[in-house]
Length: 249
Image (cartoon, rainbow, N blue to C red; front, side, top):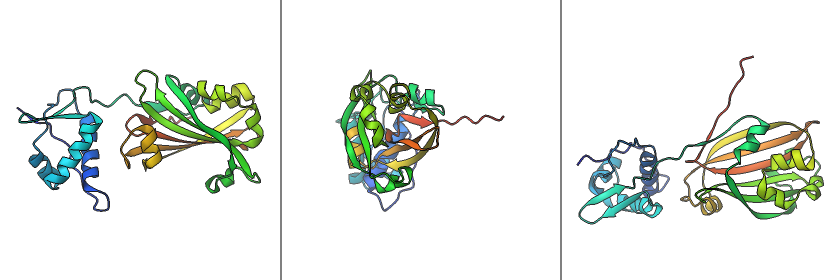
């Protein structure tokens, strides 16, 4: 029987080897062609392929088994779960209406809210303000219940009294500010970075610690150019992509 051929990887000695191997093999499994064989090479063959010990390889495979991506059968070998395929990415598009529409098909849980001192990293966006209102939400896929992202919104404190918490469970902050609070939005500036999941993100999104995530910061401005809202969102790296369309005219 032909075995699945995973991609190669250049190991970084500063990170745990088992983690790097598990993430590389995970990416190969999720990105495989439907016609690829489901049987994995033996532990010894995989260890040789990645240049690690059999013990390290076994630890990496255990991680993938716990995720449900592979099953291991005594005397038969290790097999990829047929359903383990990368889902179609949700694309973040570059208009206010698209940002509002992007959250459709998700259920939302409000984890926390309140008033906090302006975080140092956001001070430039809220000049002269001592505090901001903050809202922390977890979003899950409506069909599968799988966590997809968690978001913290920091808005001007003077807007907080006009934000209904029930609306934040139904709609994204952009829609609430525009259509409920009634502020006029002039633009949104997006910044997207590749990050590794910290303990909080790993727990909320149910992904391994240090797995790839998409770190999004969106700053919403009013007509006078003042920031209304700073959204900091952590997306699962295997569920989202970022698309920008540039008009040539």
